[in-house]
Structure formats: structure tokens, C-alpha cells
Image 1 (cartoon, rainbow, N blue to C red):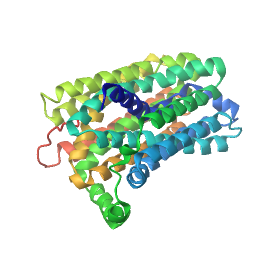
Image 2 (cartoon, rainbow, N blue to C red):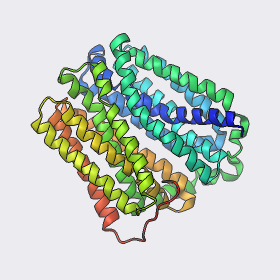
Image 3 (tube, helix red, strand yellow):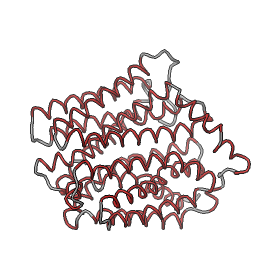
Image 4 (cartoon, one colour):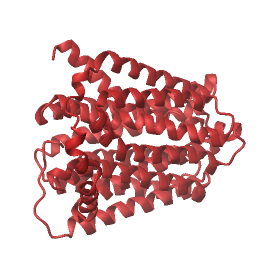
Length: 410
């Protein structure tokens, strides 16, 4: 591959990988305004966030199988066409029920990006080269979590909440056009022969693979660590706009409050990559959990003491996210190495689906429990931190097992 084609490919993969994160976060500062527009409660508008995560979970489970069956190129084209159209429909939805329906379609289309981008890298590169590609794009994906609310806050302030979805539709259209000119038929060359492999993909062996992974306690221990971190972040993301709105901050101002979180995650991610060469996986996880628990405890105390101060939430959450920067890559790689190699793809899809479904559950209930109150939000997040710590202690630290070693995927 020429240098020019390589750079085009990296840009495309980065855009595909980050679009679902961007689409999840860009409208967060607009949630209070949208509740007024649709004449609904905080909990009802937060449902649009919950169903988006459910749509992503569904995509995690089925898109990989479909791309193996029909080829990456067709699935990418169909997925981003659906994503773009659904984003436009979201902008022009006149009822909350229509908006939620279009958000589900948007999530399924956007979920194509995260799944097929990993497959496209694996199609083109060997393991060592793939690690280099992922290490290039992961920090950018992390930064998209900060840019989403930042951009969305300004768009909402100047042109209303609808502009955030029109912006995302343009994002999807750009990706679709890049895919048309960059992805060739040869990118589907590793799609399986359906006549030969369909029993493995769609039949009993596939079900058996899911069952084997689900009953692997070591896999579940690491997967629950990832789920806990993701649930904490997503619960904070969906509830904090209402907390900040109640404290008197505009959508424009709220957009700035999420930048520190993504920067903290990037710092944690880069630090973990350096430490993993010098320490065992468990030691790096201990560092991550120390930060994770410290941030959660400080949030509970800060919200109770510094009432009405947004930085009593932002600073502790940045520490939590710094810990996530350690936990996510290390726990994810450890979960993948805890299963047999023939079930690695199954484990990857299942872990992503569990992650999104648990986050959807938490994002729904945090709205009902907290109702825009900072103290209640901090208690909810503190409980999730404790659950993550318990899964680490019970399923990883105190479970007799062979020494886990780091892999090149970290």
C-alpha cells in the first residue's frame, strides 16, 4: 500500500471508529433544551441516550457476522447510509417517540463503524502492524469524546439542538464518500464462503461459543471491569447536563466541562501503555483502580460539601476517567486472552454488547434516581465504582488462576 493510500485508510478508520462516540456525546449539552422542545420529563429525554446504547449493543452482535457474510464494503455503505438518513430524521422529528425511533436507527448505522473498522484493519495487516494502527487512532477516538459536547454546546447555543444532528449527518456523509473512494472490493477478500462456514457462524457452534465465553469467570471478571468504567462514564454523561443546567450553566458553557475528561483518559491510556512493559497486568490494574476509586470517593464527598460548584464533580470525574484510561485497554486485552482463540471474535462482540447494555440500563435508572441532583448522582456513581472494585477483587485478585501476562494488544 502506498503512503498516500495508507494515510487515507487511517483517516477513514479513525472517522469510522469515532462516529458512534461523537454521535453519543454531541447532543448532551442540548438535553435540557430538548426536554422543553418535546414537552417531556428529564427521564423521558434521557431514554434517547439509553436506546442509542441498546442499538450499539445490537450492532456489536450482528454486524461482524453480516460483514463476514456479505463483505465489509457493502455493510459499511449500508450502515453509513442508514446513519446519515437517520441523523437527518432526528433533526426533524416532531415527537419524542419519532425521535427515539430515529435514534435507534442512527445507533445501528453508527455501530457499523466501530465493528467493521476493526475487521478492516485485521483484513489488511498482521498483528504487529494492527497494533501500530490502533495505537495511532485510539487517542484520537478518546479526544472525540471531548469534542462532541464541546462542538454540540456551541451548535445548540447558536442554532438550536437540531443543528447537532445535521452536523452528525454531514459527518456520516463524509465517511460514506470516503468509503466509496477508499474501500475496494479486495477489502472483502476475507469474507467467508457462506456455503462452507455458515454452520459455524449461524448455527450451534456459534451458540456454543457464546455459552463458553459467558461461563468463563476470568473473562467475565475483566469484562465487568470494563463495564463498570463505561457505566460510570455514561451515567455521568447523561445526568450531568441536567445537574449543570440546574446550577445555571448554558449549553455553551457545559460543552467545556467535558474536555478535561477526555484529556484525562488519553493521559491514562498512554501511561498504561508505558507501564505495561515494566509491570504485570494486575499491578497496572491496581493503579487504575486506585485512581478509579479515589475519584469516585472524592465525587461523593465533594458533591456533599461544595454544593452548587461544578468543579466538585468535574475534577473527581477527571480522576475517575484517568483511572479508566488504565483500566480499559488492559482489562479489554486481558479479557480477550482469557478465552480460547477460536472464540476471540465472539468474546469481542459479546463484551461490547454487555458493555453497551449495562450502560443503557444505568443511564436509564440514573435519571429516575437523581433527577438533576448532584449529591444523588455522586452516590449513584459511587455505587458503580464499588461494583467494579468488587468484580476486580472477587473474580481477578482472589481467584486462583495462572499468571496473566500482557499481550501485544495492550
